[in-house]
Image (tube, rainbow, N blue to C red; front, top):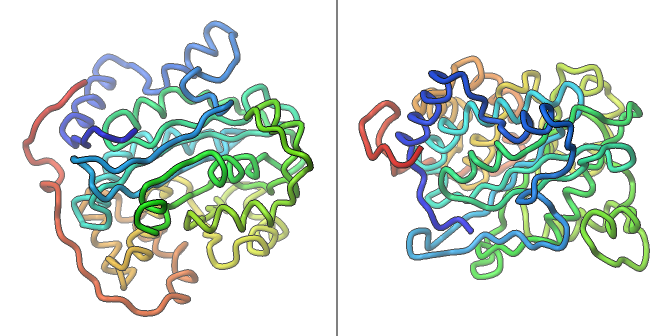
Length: 329
């Protein structure tokens, strides 16, 4: 997947059309709620699939980026934020030269012990298809109420059910951002994996084993929104730090999640060596200054752990608001 191109003008036109017609971007979520037919969208079903990020003539050096968010309870706002700010995220990544050929996968996670749709996984996409994948997510809003969600299933899927050229051909790790305010379960339950993914495991897998396999292929960050009742819990924050160390980002406003993702990638790719300059990049790409400041704060501890790098950004897209190919709606 990921052979099309991103068109900022086409995305803006699509958003304006939705606004003018009072149409939701989350058409599948609306469908499920209107019909009561609760199931994972066929194209987001993780059972028996491998998600691929591939190089092509249009994208010779693809970079796999996965964003998988908790869709339970208060976390249901995150996919809507992602959809609204998708254009700004792509402008920062491409226009500011952070990543020349990003391919983004979106997914949703709930609680496999009680939710009807606990894991939803899209495709790695380069163009407007990523917006369409967001529209196929069912925002269940359930959860088990015991401060655990099945983030470990998302990690397992990314470790064992993806094939990415950036790593397999060039030895360059992709990115995984998981987002949620509760804890992952301590093990990958083989019966749940059999049911949801079709894998026949001989035993339950301890979470650290899966994280180790995942980190061979991906730079994995977990974003904890701290303005929720669970996210502000020190025990939950420390639990994640025990798993991922400094790659746990404490974000006090989930509306800044796109800015945080972009700035994190800029730091890791060496195109940002100063958070203040990175915040200027965000604002220059059309992001809200307050959101840029929030992202800076979330990344300050991680940035302090990195060695200094040269800052270089080469624009690859015209500035926001400029004219261009309107693309498809």
